[in-house]
Length: 157
Image 1 (cartoon, helix red, strand yellow):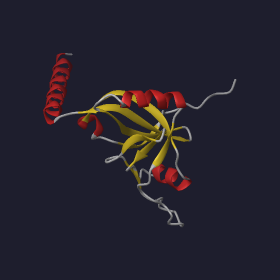
Image 2 (tube, rainbow, N blue to C red):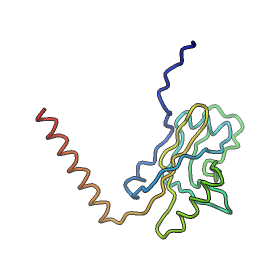
Image 3 (tube, rainbow, N blue to C red):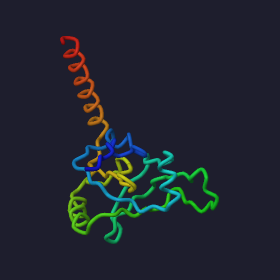
Image 4 (cartoon, helix red, strand yellow):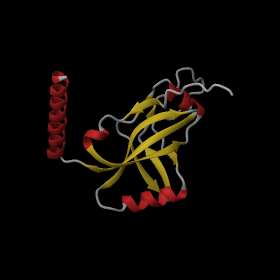
């Protein structure tokens, strides 16, 4: 019997840190990304930026917009467009479910992170609702309260 190599899990290329602060994430969806070779290499170098990115469904096809990938450092062609719309790869049934959920008022698709699962680039999308300023403050208070509780429990043990 052949021995398998242990896998460390997916290699994260970039993360949208503001997403969990600005939105309440209801569900997450994993989708494939349609990229060129130079974009994949640039992502492996960590040249992706999800800060202003958002996703939507245009004419029945899911796309991610404003996802910036800086050109690959060793690219000689110079044909890269950093903020082009990039197609998302989902099954037809998943797209139908997303369309139904996005019709509900306040729901939006927010890219959370881009990572590599084996040789494939994947994007994690969050089905989210926007938070108001007061909601953000309340979430910060709750997080701080949880930290204090965990600190106290560590001190006692």
